[in-house]
Length: 144
Image (cartoon, rainbow, N blue to C red; front, side):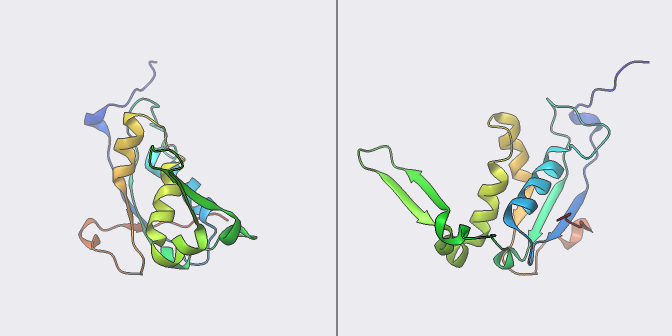
């Protein structure tokens, strides 16, 4: 019996919706990254994008445990001397909670062309409404 190797032609993709209200950011991000990558499928192939589409709703109600709201910072560097900008997660969660979830998931994906293709299947929304009802997404329970 030969080993099954998936390719772009025989991958069937499903849509999942995750309600992140009251859940820790890291737990949601790690399980969403696993679904995006396709590791939950028996046909997982490391060099092929076999993952599913994921919609994360209520990301404004996601929690960071302990003192991470004040101690954890997002850093970006302009490339110039003294160009490091830091923003605490309290400010990010107030202004752009979608960005915090997106960056947490993106950091858990491969840093190559496969990761860049995989992150395009993630949709993050602040409220409980999303515009992907036509795809008939299934509810996905996050294990805490």
